[in-house]
Structure formats: structure tokens, C-alpha cells
Length: 508
Image (cartoon, rainbow, N blue to C red):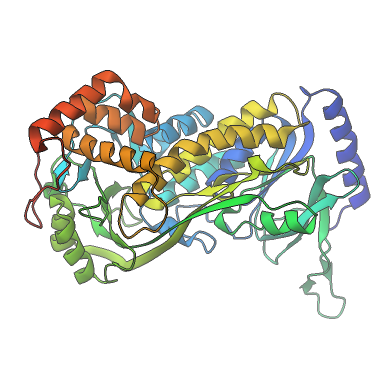
């Protein structure tokens, strides 16, 4: 069913003019491309400002926590950092309780999830910050349910965005050109170009329709086409950083028997220069048959990749040395296939450095910066960007892009530097290592050792890891004194690897 495109466009332009004259007035329509985590969070923020928010997704979206073609990585282990959970809870009150009601686990991030480095475990204690363990699929499904209920938000599926509509005279994006596939949920409100054949009665795809919008936000992830779109409009390319990590991890789900791991709900084994093999074990909500689950993953860098088999997982778990990880992979009952995920490089696009950028257009989420997934930062960074979008919109739409990109860059700086610095500590990761990077990595190695016996140091580190505190908090005199005191006592001031036999864990 078609609507009059001119009427829709005229109404949008009139509302846009009113909004420009009065920044506090809701504008007519925003369009978000991609129902990713960033897209869902962007839609939530935009619903405060715009009368309509259209969230366009090329996939058909399941109602339940299920995989979809556009996010094949969603079945892999994911962690929502404590700061990310706080923000999502603020935006969607009751979010945490809803995940717990589905079988997700709520706990203290310092007590219930443990952190291992070089086969040593950080001191466990409650730090007063709540985390929730649930699959990425469950997290996204819960957010989708809540976004669908937002006034003015329309989640339209099986929609292919051809390109944003760009007006060269005003140097602004004015909408999107799109087509929607048969069977999608795109409503009659889309100025659709689909027609019905008089001979066969079948719906046919014709030229793309143009939907007007006051703001278009690209949340399509690493594969974002914004760089090529900007180039076609005559803009200089954004500077892009890449750090090649060649990470690969093998993962699987297992039946969760609490007797195997005691009171531990999650284990994070970080890669270090002496043991550059990360591992993770996280409790998950039950599957559709009601079976309690673990998700486990073991990885390696630079071609040191574990085999994609249960035996391969067991061998790598023993090399990593986490007692719980070994127990689950050795004795746990496998649920489903053993999977592989490969991540070639981290990438960051510096749109904040562009001298010119079209009005009416933004980029968010992984389309801005895509981090090494082993650090679990992606969802939380997207949540932090959503808060910056809210703040940037308070001053209206004029100058929104530079205002938002500057704020988003400050959000991204810390997790990017943390992840890249940690990756460059590994000898197989190529890239320059200036003196500041080497000094920070040497200090982090000392923190790992001190945190095994000092709860104050462990708490300070975990708060930074969960993006609750900034890295300079690790440099305050009280923490530094504890770090160097522990390092001097244990190793004479030189960071040395632990020497536990493979398969055993030093819990100190």
C-alpha cells in the first residue's frame, strides 16, 4: 500500500523548520539504520526529542532471544560491563529484573565474577557494583521488546537502505532511500515503491522510495557504508585507525552444574605477554528446554588459534589453566555445536576530526569504533554514546554532528586506549610501542600481581575494567604504593610470570 510521498515530505520539512526555530520543540522524524545495540539505544534517546523514530533493520527480528543473520557473532560469549548495565537500567527501568526473571544471574562484579591473569586470581570481595550475566541474544531481545513499546517508535524489518538522501545545496542529509522486502513489517507509512503485478498478483520491487527525516543515524556496525557515502557526496575521508590482532576463539555452550564451579558465576582469563591465550566462562540464562547453561570460549592471537572441536577447547583450557574452565570443558555436557569466531582487527573512525560533515547525519556504535571483543566493551561504549547523544540534542539540531562526535570521541578514547594498549602488550600483535605504552603495560603487569593479594588494588582495577572509574584512578598515590609494595615483595620489582602447572590455578 502506498502513501503520497510529497505530503509526507512536506509535513516533515514543515516540522523540521519549526524545530529549527525552537530547539526545545520535538522535530518530526528521525531514522536509525540498524537495530543493533547502538541502534536500539539511539532510538530510545531520539524518542525523547522526535515525534517519530523509524528504526530500519534488514533482518526479520525474532520475538525471542534467537540468532539472526545480521549478527552472527551474537551467539558468541558477551559480557555487559557494570557501567553499561547502569546506563541501560536508567534508560529502561526494570531491565535488570527482566533479565533475571528470564534466568539471567545478578551479582557483584568483584565477588561473583572472578578475574585471572597468568594463572593467578585477583582477590575476591564485594565492591558494590551490580552485574548481570545473560546472553547477547537475551539482552537484545529484551531491549527490542522495550523499544517497540516506546511512543512514536516504529521498528521496521526487512528494509534495505540504499543510501541516505543528500541535498548538496544545503549540505545536509534529508532522509533515506530504501526498499523493503516481501514479508517485512514495513508499514504503509513508508513511501513505498512496491507495486502489484496485474498478471501474477506478486509484489515486485521497483525503484527505491525516499523517506524524509530531520536526522539519520547510522548504527550498522563494522560494515558501515558511511565512509563511501561521504566520499560520494564530496567529503574528505575520516581518519581511520586499525590495530591488527588476528584473534580467534572457539566457543560452546554446556549444561551448567553449579557443583563444578562452586559460587563462581563467571571467569575472565586475560591474555598476558607470558600467557597470550584468553579464556572466558560465563553463566547464562536457561535454554528453551530450561537447561541451565555455561558459555565458554578459549582463544589465541596471531595464528595461535585453538582447534574448532571439543578436544581443541579442552587442550587450550588446560594451557590457560583456569580450574573452572578446565572442569566445564572436560566434564560438562555439550549443548549445540562448537563454534569459531575470528576478529582480524580493531578499528576506529575519527569523524570528530573531519573539517566538514553533513548536517542531519550521525554515526554511532561499532560504525564509530569496533573493539577487540575479548574485553567486552562494545555494548557499554554504545550505551555511553547514547547518553552523549542525549546531551548533544539538548542544544538542538544545529551543529549536532560536531558536538556529538567530539563527545563520543572522549567516551571512546579510554576503552580504545585500554584495549589497544593491552593488545600491544602481546608480542605477536604488530604496531608501534612508544615509551608511554610500554610504561603503562609494565605497570598493569604489576597491578595483576598486587591484585592477587590486595583487595584494594583489585577493586580499583575492576572498577576501571567495568568503566565505573577512569584509568587515572589506578595512579593515585595510595594505589601506586600498594602496587609497588606488592611487586617489590613478590618479585623484586620485576613482573615475572606465575609458574603454576597447566590446569591448576593459584588462588591467593
